[in-house]
Length: 105
Image (tube, rainbow, N blue to C red; front, side, top):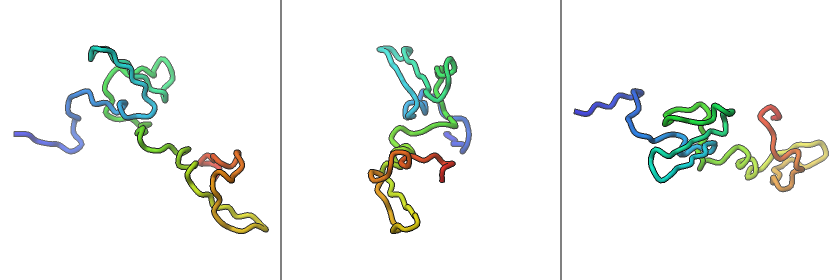
């Protein structure tokens, strides 16, 4: 009889979140034991990952667009005195206004 427990221990295997994370660099050799994973979000010497990762607080799937990618595609609504209110394409913005941090809004 097989019982699934929600929120229980993850099943065995070496499926690591690092395999799909944008910050991971994975190097593999010809044997399964020849594998090196390093995380760009951790500082050396802690960036070497020595086990399959099941959960990570800074995981970002590599196929999902980054904030910067989304900003490059987004239209920006600008309001200034004496000008028409409307959307501006990112290519029409000055470089210093293209990429804002969350504290700039």
